[in-house]
Image (cartoon, rainbow over all chains, first blue to last red):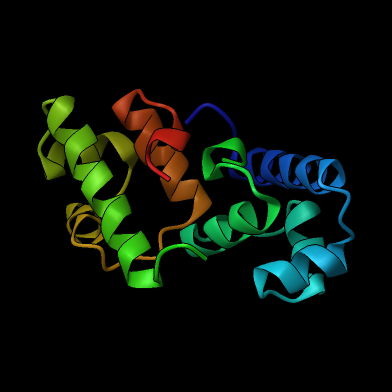
Length: 71
Length: 71
């Protein structure tokens, strides 16, 4: 694989944070919209989670973007 | 979210199978290339797995496609 596991998780977290900022949402607001806890959003953005398909879809749906924009 | 969890996992499985066939690989060959077990590939294709970011990236890398093509 091209990047290490940690680099992939960090890159996902960065894309999530950028998409959240572009949508003008706080971590709490995104969590509410996606049906997730804000602390989970925070840990994903800090590159600490090997996030699952369903949560990727929940976040993309809440942000109004394509899941491919995050992975 | 637009689709149910089961529908999302099934749709991912279908896209993975189509991409694998397009690449002319067996489940065993894809598993070898992605560093995963063939039975895991089989369960993902049958829509039974909430696959993680890292495994999505491993599979896309092994298939030579973008991860967004699978999610």
